[in-house]
Length: 141
Image (cartoon, rainbow, N blue to C red; front, side):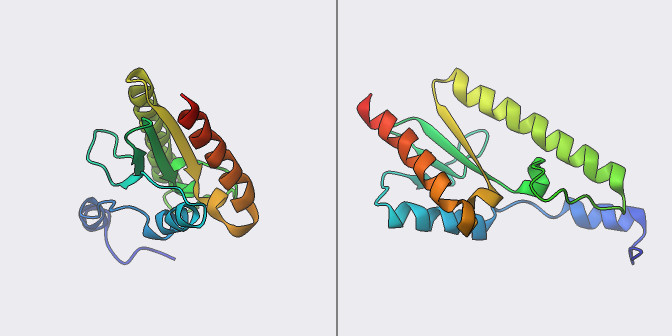
């Protein structure tokens, strides 16, 4: 389907759209925290890199990454319209994710990146197990 706006108008509209967090996936992670008695986390902590959740006392930053936006190939979804734009957009996001991870790790933080698809029901047991393992390891330190 052709866009109803010309290129300049669409660009202007899209520039006004700013990420405010993916509430549905973040809420699934909060539910996972609650169901497993995981406490001590803070959401949307104001720090460069904008992790979705932090455990300040453990120096753990958690990012919940949307599969399409951050380049996960779980569904192999690729738009045909404006294909080059979307490819470059995802590549920029992937590059930024690596830079942010390196920044946190250079400060002594552990970074956990959870893909959107890992919070789906069929993948939740493995995601929960991995998360609990990392948190438990940091309790022992």
